[in-house]
Length: 234
Image 1 (tube, rainbow, N blue to C red):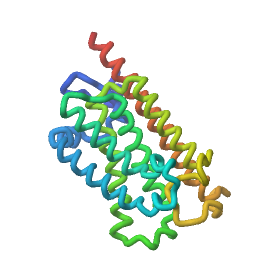
Image 2: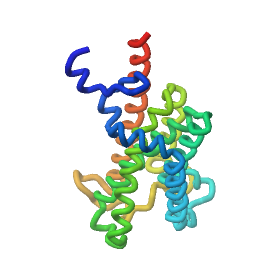
Image 3: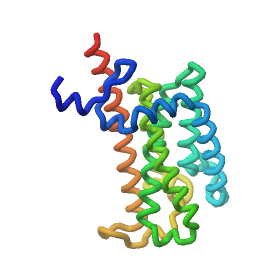
């Protein structure tokens, strides 16, 4: 192993070594999250409850058939709560962990991106609520990067998560299955002109598509690097 590779890899107590770009969370924080896993589950369940309340007005104006695609962030925190709980009970479900990873990467990045892109139009949010939404969603990204510790990310599980979030992209921005696209309500009209000659819908769509592609790359990269690590030890 070259010196450069050695610097890029982080050796784990379990013998696993992954590139630093796949393990950006300090090991101490990883260990803390796993040690207090049930507290993490409780926090995410509380966030899920708050999220469903936050989306209540959108549920009211959305056809019931489309409700599964409305509460994006609450579903992501529910996925991670269930994934960690299943692992703690000795019944880790790879498909559920993959959904949690995708959801927390995608919504954890997309929401702060949207809050920044439309910062002037979110003036109706109090500074406390704005900052709560911004930083709590970035915290979702942090916990996503701990999930590799509890799952091998098999390709079939990654495919399940990719299909779900692909369907989410379709109904949010591209194919209005029932009525209009069902993306999270934004504080400006969809056709509002934004930067680089894009409209508002295009701006938020670009952010979410990028986040989904990033999540897919990271999940598959984790899988590949885990397999390579196993082979190098055999």
